[in-house]
Image 1: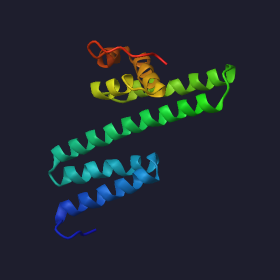
Image 2: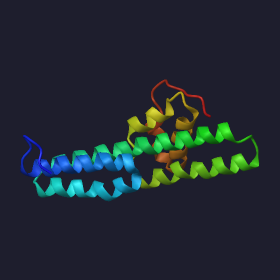
Image 3: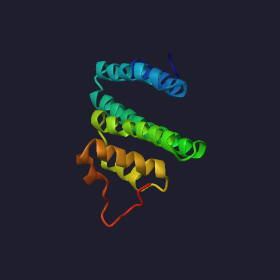
Image 4: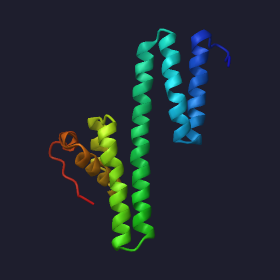
Length: 151
């Protein structure tokens, strides 16, 4: 794909960014297929710093997506299901998501603090689940002098 004013390797980067944007709209599975290609294109073009920056940016977007998705599912369960054993089972199963993600993803101090200090119960529960999944993350969530209500 050639764009006016974009030459060579930059046109490949632009084309990849466009595919990644469209993939993000299509769903997470498509992003997972396309994302590594952009890193490879940048590395082959001798732009390893840009490749690292892209990798970090996509990982940060992915973390936000995980947080938002969990929070939406949590709120939907609370809204749509009456209190009881079935809802408790489903919420317990949902809490396994951040437990697993704590083990498989790198979580920045800012990402954890953002979730922990949120006004939304689902986001705070996500942060709590991360800390349960990896207790080393507890220190990243505790901002000086800031306390939060546990959902």
